[in-house]
Image 1 (cartoon, each protein chain N blue to C red):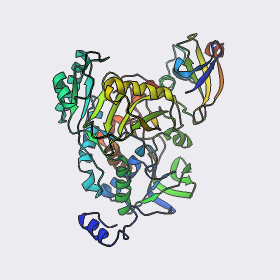
Image 2 (spheres, each protein chain N blue to C red; image 1 turned 180 degrees about the horizontal axis):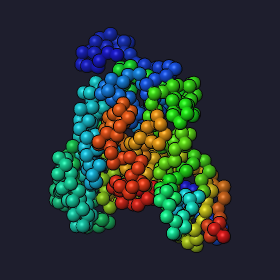
Image 3 (cartoon, each protein chain N blue to C red; image 1 turned 135 degrees about the vertical axis):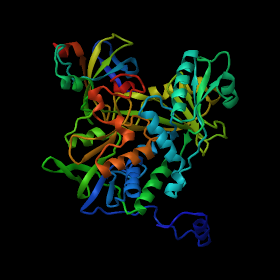
Image 4 (spheres, rainbow over the protein chains, first blue to last red; image 1 turned 90 degrees about the vertical axis):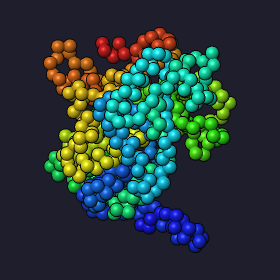
Length: 418
Length: 88
């Protein structure tokens, strides 16, 4: 694999751009691997990369039923932040943020990470108090956070509704300057290319249909491209975790739900930051192409269909216009749906399982994108050592039995409310 | 938009209803000391890709709790009934 650089760009430009290679090898499955990772999304690919990079385990396959970038890694709204309140989340997402900051260099691939800053508006004095609490927790963990009053918010994002008629007047905001966005496809492609460069086989169009057992231990997977043996199997298939876990005889505290995302027609630069609306579940940013990218609530009932309903479309657009009346005449270019693993406490599961040989990375609810590098880093360590890394000790399956949940959303054990 | 045929009010948009989750889980007896049974009741879900029995309440209509059988892939609804009759 040749490195990308200014010189490689110039060399290829001078030779008519005929010499570019595939970003990753089109691998055919071997009989067996040390580690097989099911799911070629961001988390699976990051896991494969860090297995090779950090642990020297290169006899690894990533099997993906569709194509790289076709699942949730290409369906999210690309927001990256580490403004979490609860122990376990705070440290994990900040570790992820640090990996994002060095990702383009580490992968030799421009993931277009843009630290444009994210703010969440507060709409009452009480809400601003809880944001102050959060900011204090963040700062005591070494994470950047600022509390802005109404005037400061107005200076930063003057296009929000500051009029007397605003439905929920803005009192202030919590701001994280290091938050931002990244090009989600580039993240998938960058990890795939870097992992492939380390010798990892990335096998697209290869659906896992069952597990291979020897006694109680899982020793491989049956796929649409034949049987593949595995020393260890890592499951990283957000959305369909339940479907595959069931084949392994594993029952999980997960429901699959649909989340929609939306993009408008492109307009001139308008939104410089990532803005989240504290009075409703709504957030937006502007893509480099000019479209306003936004999202809101789950559709709210179990679903495996990657298409949404118009009720949520209307709710999200209502929230958008309540926050930014000036975009009311923009046309929506498209909207799409992704299937989320929703857990009862809205926190992910990176865990050893009761099934020998099977390791689980799932339950990302709808915050999985920002976690991609840290999730891969920790899951790789788990697959390499068979132990739970300190950073994800709070994300074990046992927390639902012991009551040590990380209930950031505070919605209780109802997955569809998270 | 799903359309749910409420046995009391007729065919209505699902935005009139509130989702109530998996209707197949059984609450253990109040004095059941088995922690595992309570764990399974509160947290574990079959989460099928296909037919799913689930609660919906017609909050903007008759306010009855219903059991709806719905396909989680196609969203086609196979049956709707009152949940209290299921219990009897």
